[in-house]
Length: 346
Image (cartoon, rainbow, N blue to C red):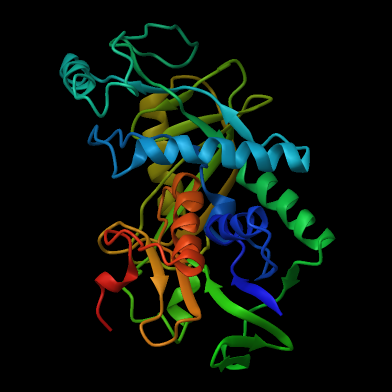
């Protein structure tokens, strides 16, 4: 008998799988291998919400937790998918500079906001008011991460590539079974697919569509993640990822002309150089109405669990939320009420 069946192969599911691996638990991951929103995510890890210049709950602790977590995976798999690179917030006015300095005086934000205005010159990135640098940031190559982790799971016979069929799940007093696989517990981490889950589809996971552009901008030569009304992540060879949009009505993963036009407009407010659009992607982020994760155990079945609702901060939230859920199941450690799915009534 296995310890866990994990349904979903995005950042949530893989974070829980790695937590199981680190604790010598037997598990299998069932996924379509598309990775869902993870594969079209920007992958930026940044503790500060730059739009409002505030720090989400436990963001500092999460940053300390995720770096060794991901670096150990990279060392074990022999791949480098984490890229430490500063985020430079482009100031549009003196007022924005002053807001930055005021935020940097707050004890919680002081470790993350550099108080020196940066006046680095980048060809094609005009910044007459300079930049604010966020400390300790970078991005994850989410596509490479998932590809290598799926390979690892396949080599360990811990991966089943299929669409999960809820009708095949059988509940026993002290276990669950699915198509001949028996386990003590099952963890659902399907992202926006939650809407089809008969055990948890009452939860308010609305989902927001996000779209990204891939552009080629020779001569820009950025060695930072530039942030204006969009972000630009340098991927090498003059290629940049640009995003992202937020769409609450359209729940398809089809790229749209509307989003393309919005991204182009915001991109051209940020840079002033020739570029070529070479790609566009779209995905549905698993966002909850109160913008907090959904972690916990089913109100009726104590061997059915959920890890979802990571929203736009999956890189930062995946590992610590996985630990919360694992410690709750295996060690009866209470899940923080702010993220416990029990905050929503059936």
